[in-house]
Structures are given as structure tokens and as C-alpha cells.
Image 1 (tube, one colour):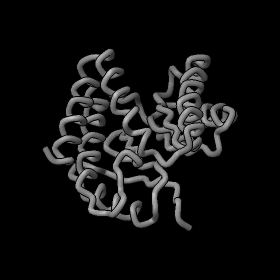
Image 2 (spheres, rainbow, N blue to C red):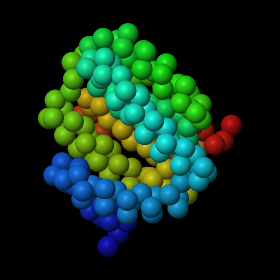
Image 3 (cartoon, rainbow, N blue to C red):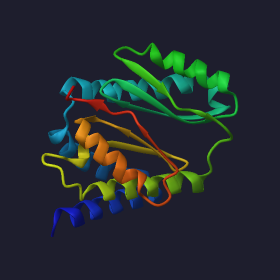
Image 4 (spheres, rainbow, N blue to C red):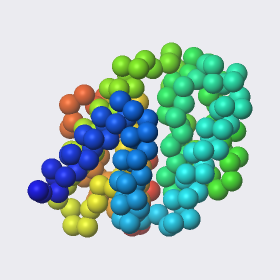
Length: 197
């Protein structure tokens, strides 16, 4: 079985697990995540910090119900850089949340991409999960020496695709061009960190 088909099967399983059950998601994600860590360009400390940053960001939201009531925000940390995506009916609450999470230890930068609007529906979230899988599958066939798709963090909100990771400029340009060409992608937001200057 070729690499493309293997990734396709794994990502299809992840999407199915995400939609159908929570426990299966943890098991599959743990197995895939362990394999991905081997290829990660982040240090082990940065990987651990990213997990802690995301947990603390979620905790801050839980501690502030006045923000949670008016905002649906997902925190995604990569190499201690925190991306906030989602929607808020009250943008002042979203800005306040961004300031609160910026104070989390080890956060180097916050990218507040929250937009004004009502909460996304279950259908929207399912569509975003599908789009993320579709994007990841499209990256499996990249013909760049040394490129590994596990180094690219893909997140989607309302068909806007956010790309993070430690990549070369050549990798970033190729990935961004590939994602822009995918049917249904409304916008590509590149938040890559470059390993070559």
C-alpha cells in the first residue's frame, strides 16, 4: 500500500472517529500523534508547552462564562504561538480573551483570528472537520524533498483554512498554493514559522 493510501485511510478514520465517538478519537489521535512527534521540528519542550498552553486557554474560557456565552473560540498552539479561531457576537469579549491567554506562561505570540458572528452549528463544525481532512489528504502527494505533512498544523473554521508549522519558505509556498486550489476553501491564512531565513 502506498503512502498516500495509508494517510488517506488514517485521516478517514480520524474524521469518522471525530464525528461518531469521543473515546475512539482519543485512541486514534494518540496513536497518530505519537508517530507524528517523531517527525516534528519542534523541541520536545515546545510540544509539551503547546499542550499545556491549549489546556490553560480552555481553562481560562471555562473560568469566564461571560466570554464563553458570547464567543466560540478554539485555541491552537504551535511552537508556543497561539492561534485563536472562531466567532463572537461580542468582539470586545474576544479581545479580552486574547489578552487573558497572552499572559499564559511560555506564549510567544497570539494570533487573534476571531470574527464577529453567531456560534457555528454542528453542521458547520462537521464541514470544517471534513475540510481539514481534505486539506491534509491533498498534502500527502507533495513532491518536495524532506517534506512531511505531519509538520503542518491544519485548522479550519467556516471553510477558512489556517496553516501553522515550522517549515522552509519553499514548503510554505508549495503548501499554501496547494491548499488555495482545493474546492470549497474560502481563504487560506498562513501563520507559518520559517526555519530558513
